[in-house]
Length: 94
Ligand SMILES: [Zn+2]
Image 1: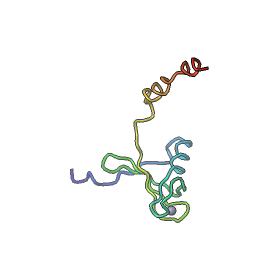
Image 2: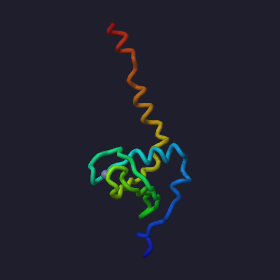
Image 3: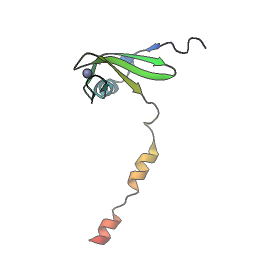
Image 4: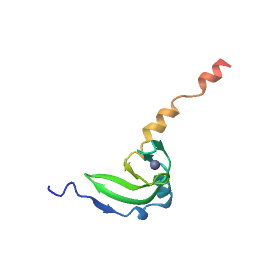
């Protein structure tokens, strides 16, 4: 497919407001070399079947790109593993 490397525009502002706030806060700036500086003027697009949000670093104004990782929201296994460390040991030590 010759157009597989084309950007496909998506509507960032169609997302849940909480999600928007998360994405705008959880950033990595290559120029500042710091996380969570925030970004402004976000533009969401799809490229090579991956989702990106591109904006400007709120601190230095350089482009800041976040890749969205989908599908790890409903992973019940992680919660189950944490639940396996039961408090019984602590009780027997007391
Ligand atoms: Zn920056």
